[in-house]
Length: 106
Image 1 (cartoon, rainbow, N blue to C red):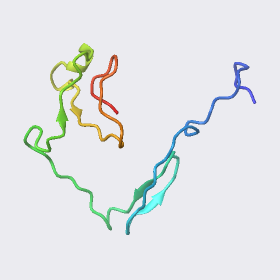
Image 2 (cartoon, rainbow, N blue to C red):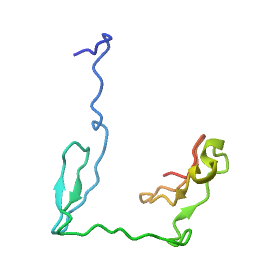
Image 3 (cartoon, helix red, strand yellow):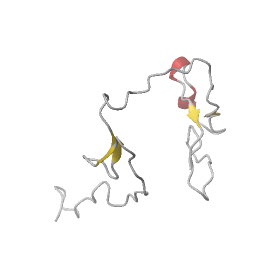
């Protein structure tokens, strides 16, 4: 099948996504509506949404500095500055900065 330009049809968005193993504890259930890997979901009346606010900067300890070579667009101005958080890398991976990255990634 070909696209409107006569090229080979595009690959489906999730065709190369590798989903990890996960389980949804009750009352959550697995939903796969339009997502690549699905997600655990429960109605708000069964699991209340956590709407807490952290009032002190970096109270969680998960905020990290921007990459040394971060583009100037990452730095603001003002409240528009990018805030970076410690990435949760898989075993064997380490957080690092690539060219043009605002924040470290796995």
